[in-house]
Image 1 (cartoon, rainbow, N blue to C red):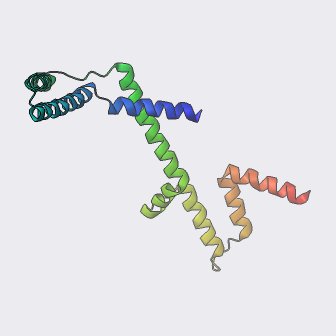
Image 2: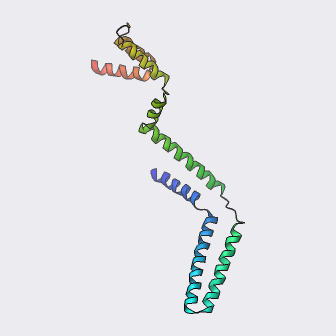
Length: 164
């Protein structure tokens, strides 16, 4: 399954990175560089035909550069959709990694954005530890069980294991 996602990510990356106009411009630059090398070589060996043909190649490549300004990249709809899906999957993956690595919790604690349930549990714990308050261990556990059904289920399961 992970290979499928990797292949989709590679296709999306290629779709973003491979502009036909950019490839044509790059290839034309390479042609002009080779033509200039042939012109220099033709001058060195005094071969007028090599210089003339290389000059024509260079001129034609220069004309391609001029005409390339009139060309527009058109991305197929399916490729655009694939690109957006890839971006969405990447954002979701980054969010998943940030949250599961603990960075998300660290940021929430740092800015003071605490869940209401956790704040209530912390207040109960502070009240339980305060010697001037009548709340004790039993009240704290009862309040925790009343607030959190998962905690209540885990508590009951732990109680049955201890009795057995």
